[in-house]
Amino acid sequence: MKTETLQPPESTDTVDSTSPSSRHPGAPSRPLIHLKNILVPLDFSETSLKSLQYAVPLARQFGAKVTLLHVLNASAHFKDADYLAYLEQEHLAVIEKQLDEMIPAGLPVETAVRQSFASEAILEAAREIEADLIITTTHGYTGLKHLFMGSTAENVVRRAPCPVLVLHQDEHDFVDPLPA
Image 1 (cartoon, rainbow, N blue to C red):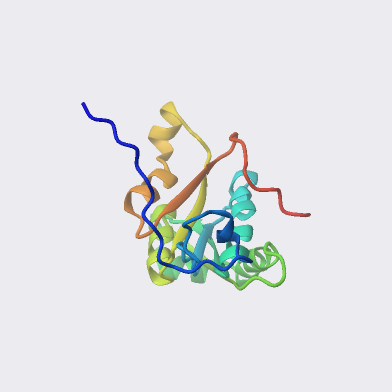
Image 2 (cartoon, rainbow, N blue to C red; image 1 turned 135 degrees about the vertical axis):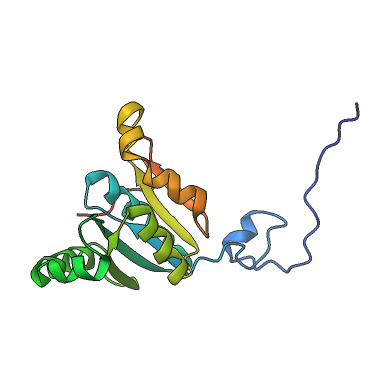
């Protein structure tokens, strides 16, 4: 068996000595990751708010727009348009105001409220906005709770049209919390 040492390919890009990439020899001078649209589904639980902790610095770093999505659970008794019409407009306004207030000033943000099954609404929104990244959380249900409730995050990961960053409630973080 032959063992080889892999070497990175020689870069033909010129490196600006003032750019962050100059700290890494051979790193290209242009960004390799392009994020324009980040989708963040929120249910207003403490766990789901962790998504913002990651979305805000990523959006700032890449100049991306953040779309906050709140999904009202689908009901077997109402069709989509009927259910939204049934809800008081004041209730929808409160939800939209909550979403609007969640992102610090200076970031391009859109908000959306949908009535559907959570994973379906997330996937539909991701396609519509041509999301480059979905940042979501999981409650970490196991056993019977997982069997009966399903896993929205799992369903999104399997069917998403873009990468998905899934955050767990009790994991260590690599970003600082947002200021209150």
